[in-house]
Structure formats: C-alpha cells, structure tokens
Image 1: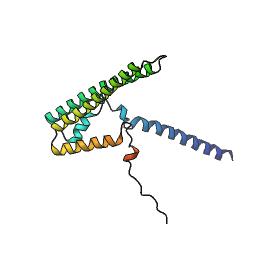
Image 2 (image 1 turned 90 degrees about the horizontal axis):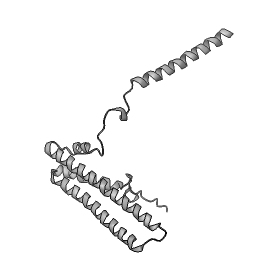
Image 3 (image 1 turned 120 degrees about the horizontal axis):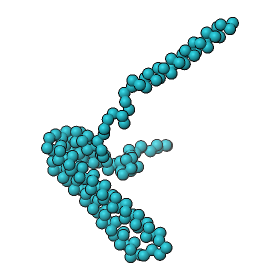
Image 4 (image 1 turned 90 degrees about the vertical axis):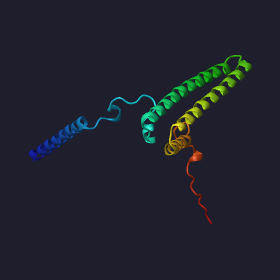
Length: 169
C-alpha cells in the first residue's frame, strides 16, 4: 500500500514544481507592462490629441505649441492660486486676522481666477484659428466632454443620464 501513496505524493510534487516553472517562464516572456515600454511624453498627451484631430505638418506643430504654452500658463496660474489660498488661510487663522488684508486677498484671488479663465479662453480661440471645420467640431466635442467630466475627471451628477421614474398605479 505504501508505494501507491508514494507515487501519488511524487506526482503531486512534480505537478507543483511544473506549475512554479510555468509561472516563472510566462513571467519572463510576457509583453512588458505599460510603464516598461520606454520613455513617455512628459506632461499631458498633446501629441495624441493632435493625432486624434488629424493635424499634420505646420498646423500640428502650431497646435502642440499652443497647447504646451497653455499647460505651462495654467500650471503657473494654479500655483499662484494655491499660494493665495495658503496665505488667506494663514491670515484667517492668525490670532488677530486683519479684515482689510483678508478682503485684499479675496480680491487678488478673484483676479487670479479671472486670469485663469482668460488663459483657457485664449487657448481655445488660438486653437480654433488653425483648425479646419471638421477638426474644430471634434475639438469642441472634446472640450464639451471635458466640461461634463468636471475637474475631478468624473461625470457630474447633473450630467448623468436620468432614468425614468417608476410610476405605479
């Protein structure tokens, strides 16, 4: 009776070892993960957006330059706003906050938000100048989808499709 159990244990051991070897072998020969595929474009994928719009040549280069400038200006504007927010919080939590200083900071933040909006508007208008009608239509659709997703990247509740209500008699 012992030899049968010995053979079963041997077969199980061989099966486990073959499974381990197969796992190691498939790990070595699989396609590299996305993050291992070489250098990626730094910053936002502007080149991919230009490709989706079907831009070529000088228009593609101009679009990429407009978008690169836009993202740099947006980054600077957002950093400015974040600095203003920190200063405002610091002043409000001070032992004796100065109302005039707080009001001045709020005014300055309003101007910073206005500059941020102007940067976006300038970008859209400059981009539209170099696009043909079909590219412009796709670009505007893209902007609409971004607006629907909001700042967090998720769709806002008011933009979600509404389900018809159940009406019970």
